[in-house]
Structure formats: C-alpha cells, structure tokens
Length: 361
Image (cartoon, rainbow, N blue to C red; front, side, top):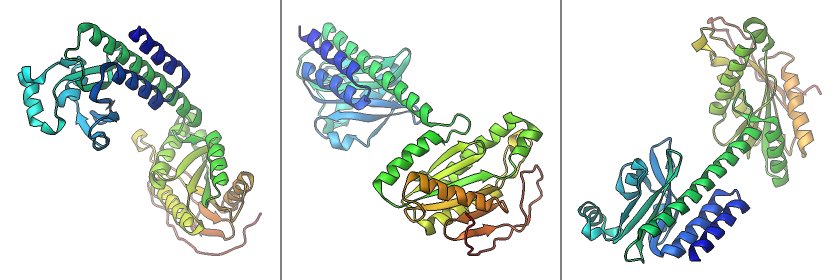
C-alpha cells in the first residue's frame, strides 16, 4: 500500500504540472520519505560539457554542492552516469573499491550508497544518489521500486524539455535563430509595465532585395542567418535581438539610456559594415543598414509610441542609407557614400559625420 500511495502521488505530480523543478521535487521527496537517506541528490547531465551538475541536493553540505561539477566517469554518480548501470553498496566498508573512495573523501562520511541512472531510451539524463539510507540492506524489491521512480523522473525531464522546446519554437524565428516579432511585443509589454529605462533599435538592411534577385532566396536566407549571428555577438547577452520581418531587425536594450544606446548602435553599425558574409559559399558579401533608435520613456511611453519612434528614425536613416538616426537628434552618423550589398572585396572609403538635426517625421 505504501508503494501504491507513492506511485499515485508521483503520477498526480506528473499530470498536474509541466514545471520540471516542481515535478522532480515531488518525486525526490517521495523517494526520500520511502528510503530515508541522510543525504540525497539529483544530478543532471550537461551534454555540452560532459559533466554532471546538482539540480537538487538535500542534506548536509547541500548548499556547497550547488556549484559543483562532476565529470562523467568520476566518483559514484559519474560512474553510474557513464556506464548507465545502477550502483548499490549497502556497506562501503565491505567493498574495496568504494571503501577506498570513502576513505579518500572523509568529509562525505559515506556508509552506504544507492545510485541509479535516470534514463530515456539509451540516453542517461541524470543520476539519483542516496547516501546512508536508513535501511540496513536495500532489497532487490526496493531497488526495483527505486528504478521505477527514476523512470518517472525521466518522463518528467523529457516532458519538461519538450515543453521548453515548444516554447522556444513559438518565440524564435526559424531563419535567423533570433527572437520573433511576437516575442518582441511580449518583452516590450514587460519593459513598459516595469517602467524602467530602455532603448529600442530598428535596423533595415540596405538593398537586400538585390541579394535575392542575384543569388536566390536560399542565399538570402543564409545571409539573414549570418547577420542574426553577428547581431547577437555584437549586442551581447544582456540585450535581445529580433527578426521583425523580411530584412528588418530590432534590438531591445534593457536599462540602457540614449547616450549608451547610441554607442551600442554605432558599434553594431560598424560591425555590420566591417563584416563579410557567406565567404564559405565563395560570395564574400558586404552589408550596410539603416538604423533607427528611440528611448523609453523619453521618446514614447507606450509600446505603440516607442515602436513608432524607433521605426520613424529608421526611415529617417533610409534617406541616405548606411546611417544612424536617433529620436530627438536626427542623423548622427553616415558614410560619405552609400554602400549597397556587393560581392566586391574592395573596401569602400567611409567617413563619419557628427551632426544634430531635427528628425523628419
């Protein structure tokens, strides 16, 4: 009856929420109640680094474990993750290998170990580790029960990852990998509601149609993807880049006032001018853009007005192209000669002209 009650509680947790931390917490709580370990933890596999990290840790020194990384193959959890096999050692003193490990790490005070992989198909997603269980011996029946709970955990992890992927797809542009316009409006709503200063940058690529006309839409899409990557690198992790539609991009600069935002915009403009695109395809295209910038709440205190202000400045910059226009200041930077997208490797002479003009609205 105890087993059935645990299964019922875990199944209810699985069907009532898609929040990974909440579900795993429920599973681990039930597991801890049943086995009564002194310390228990759930370690997840980071595929990018080939390491385990502590997703949940309860017991002594739990706080110190949060930043700890365990390479696959090392220690108890690392061995289980690497092999995909469960490890049950009722008394480490009777096992030469794990006795040596326990002696090497006296701070852990290990007496017994129960460590089971959380697997989906042939893939190890994580490891559940129970140290010093109150049971003198973990029977085969208890281990089977533990493995079933691990299967529940695997289902929860896969469901949460699927939901995360779905959420990412709904806010991501499939050509560039940047956020899409739908997510821009969501983030703008949040920024305006918070009432904190931010800046909004609009970018329209100059003469982009010539790429599609000359090289085809597939090359055009690849070019947009490379420009999206350049924007992410240039803007950094604290700012968000969006594909607004066609060859228009938007950047949201949270917490950034106008002076700082002008510097960021000019830097991106320069990065775009200096980059060469699709060299792997033998094209080496150069690209310029028309940049418009506005700041909240100075140039607009609603989503609609701040969007209109930045968009208006972008069209101001498009008069000469390869240029930056800022709300309240007009055009602040331009090149001597407008430079369309081209395949030439020859550099185009550029000159910045600082000026203050009244924007044409």
